[in-house]
Image (cartoon, rainbow, N blue to C red; front, side, top):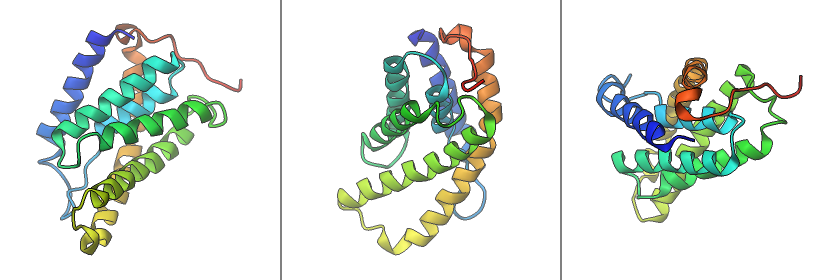
Length: 173
């Protein structure tokens, strides 16, 4: 992994997330895609070195931590655990096929938000009265993020040389 180029791409994704996606959030729950999680899921499916990918996903979670109101480290830990699970189950999930990748992105996005919600509750925030509204927003944001998976995969496939990732291959063929 070329870390400098990865840092630039992470910065661009973070800037787009904060400056474009947040203000254009849909509905009262501010439904928006999570570009950093999307990038982490695509990297976790990519056939690269395990340590590099896990560190990259942790860095993406830390970048999201720095721009959110969640307790510091909650997204970093959640992104790292999601990437670890995807790396361990990658061959069972049919490698780089888009439909399983979209389903895992939707499920992973929802689970990451639930873990961060539990972490926030554990830290002492009183959010239990708003759980229904928050969960609805989490579900729609997860679906929105999952719908963007083919575009993120296409982008990472085009930038794999710049990021220092090996050429993608499909498992199970």
